[in-house]
Length: 243
Image (tube, rainbow, N blue to C red; front, side, top):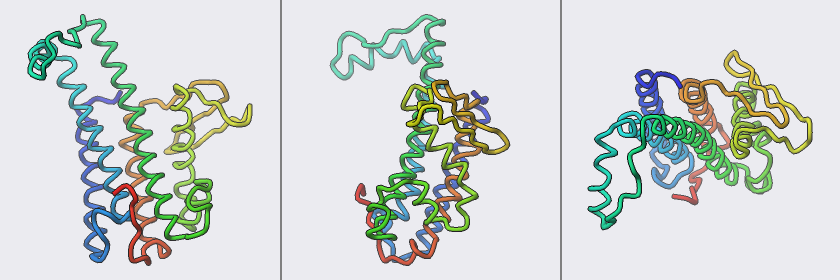
């Protein structure tokens, strides 16, 4: 994983970029309901994922390796009425394995949740912007984004394919199992090709670096284009059902 001293400020910067984009959109559209309109909450949902990733990274970096944190657990459990600690301090070798497992959980979870936030919000927007089309927002994502982004779809086509296939493989413990046997895919993105080979583990390289240095900024650019597209911005309100 990329050095945390480089990763921490990057995640903070990405979070701030999402927050600024959200605030700029609110200022530009004062009639939209800040906490309930999907064109605004799409930024918020993504930012929650990024901020949670930052908190998780802090826990992984400063707490898990610390003897003091592990030693404090019996007292902390006692405070909530649990007399026997449920987590015991592991030896150094096992602690290393725990941190590696947390890194994997954190990286894959952040990837999936960021795409989920984008996808669910986009489908909500489509249900209003293109009412009675795209099977009420349940249609193929490729068709939805092509309509939302218009001529700019090609700028994000590889990103969306990487997100879609990546999400699917992560649901299979990182192994690519296409619906059609032998349907191998090769996705070029940011000067690298990601190979999705039937029955094989997909190699993403440094996933946190890929996610926070490349994918998240591109997702933000795409969201800005979506919420400012004529078919989307023209509506008085697009209700976020989760708000």
